[in-house]
Image (cartoon, rainbow, N blue to C red; front, side):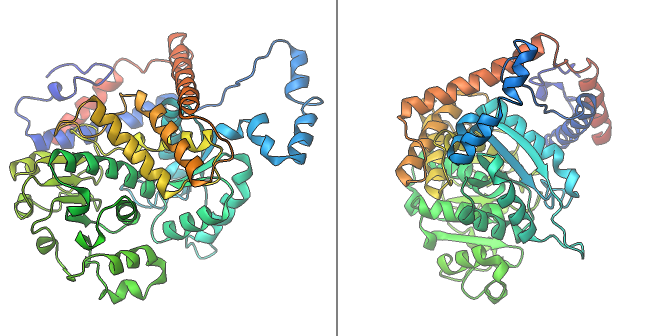
Length: 483
């Protein structure tokens, strides 16, 4: 068994030779969770705040604070739009959650979401050059039930401190009302990454996967397994991007979504699902088995699996595409899907090819919205981001094992931000206008500054390296658990 290096880039070669692929996948998950626990305890979280202005001498405190700063207050009082120029508001996002559906772990109580929300802020800063702060709130009423109206009111009250809002890990059906109400009633962009972010990156992957398979988007039969916030958003974005609703079937835990699903029609909380019911599945197909007959692509965003086997994939059309994106365990492991004939597979995990990773979307999308000082993120802006990701990957070359960019291709984020900013201007939601080159150059400069600052803090010892034995402890523990 090889020794794990600190970069973790030799992980696959480090497992015992007798481990099966399933054992390796389980061990990776356990290892990463254990390492996360050890490293978060060591660093006491992963975000901090630091000044962006200098302290040249102590008299400068009279400039950054009172009495000089009163001029900033009165200037903004007289023109609220100046808050984007005279404070950090124009590059600041709130990551807001009630922690009721944290990854696959369900309701983790309000503070239980902090690890994820800080992680979102971490990626926003490093990948997109965007400052972000985690806000995990208690939206429960006096009976202990989570009230979407309380979250809506909180965000509406807090919006004037931020340039954008990233909603995260809100259980359905509350997530639908929270997002749609805030998109309508806030004067800043509101983005629900679990829904819109997943939809954006999934669309990017589908565009290129179908292109490699020699199939047209509008002619392809798509099956969506899972009918939560993610897949309902996928459906909405797909249809706006030109996919045919009549060639689409969505399956939830009770069967196919179609116009005879009175349980959905009668529950106003699930209005996005009812929209899918009325637009798709004209033959009222009720089972996944029947839905997959002749299907070109399966997009699974359901419960952690495994939840189906390769026999179902054999029902699909030639060159089937299988996105199995449940985390941390996909609905079917990619190697099993490939054995059953899948042409292209994708998951939500970074240890398999073609990770459908929201982290490719939200840093660039929010950066683009902030650059344009947008009042909203339209569906067209999300589609522009998806198409930007797809083009970036196509330009550097597509293969069945590489249909979308990875986070290591950091040039993608500035391109995506510029494309989103241009779409914001086109959609009439931008308060600032600029050329594509101006948006790209500003995004790239902010991203480089953020990266260089982080590495400078590491090099100078202000951010410490993790203990040398931390990785080994986590790995050895995972191997023992699986063996």
